[in-house]
Length: 295
Image (cartoon, rainbow, N blue to C red):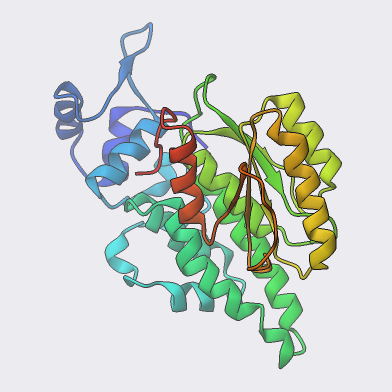
């Protein structure tokens, strides 16, 4: 993906004249800079910010380096609730169409957490039930997971780099939990909120999370619980994690469809949340100075 754009390329990408774009830049609506040779350039992340805030359709996404999607990217062509459209594309394995739907939503100003909580969650929940009555249900679900991962990584590549001073978050799924997508969603949401961090993925030992948090100076650790767990063992693991991290000033965030509603964890550094939107809100509450990247 491109890192910098000329005014001409950005103007063509969004279907306006180059003179209009330069006028907007001169008026401070979009920030640019000049190279040593005097040529105007615009950072891709700044271009993405401008597109999202102005709600302009992207006529030629390839000029933004978005060759993985089908143009044009126009939210007017996407239903207000795109769940059914996304479900059908995922069921058929139409990876480019999935990336186009989700990227269009993001460029139209929809937040990452909203995209995760809405169409992705609803579509993947339906796909996760296909195995009950279709012989190829597992194939479809696993393929859809891979396609969603690709789309989320594409969106993440469009986010601004967090400041070096930004707080750091990391997380994953507990032992014997093989689900990939929920923890990646959490990582992408935190990146959209301006946090540094990384995703340790599925089936992650508690010791690894503790060591990673201490080594990196993490401010927050998330645990995504999607697979059914023995409640007593889960409580023991999470209590141990929280006890090790409380002395480091680390908050532990628990979520996922299989998080027991009555899990008994009386630690003031533990937060149980119901959604990615709640994770985004909590990240702002914990570190108000973190830059909100997601709108």
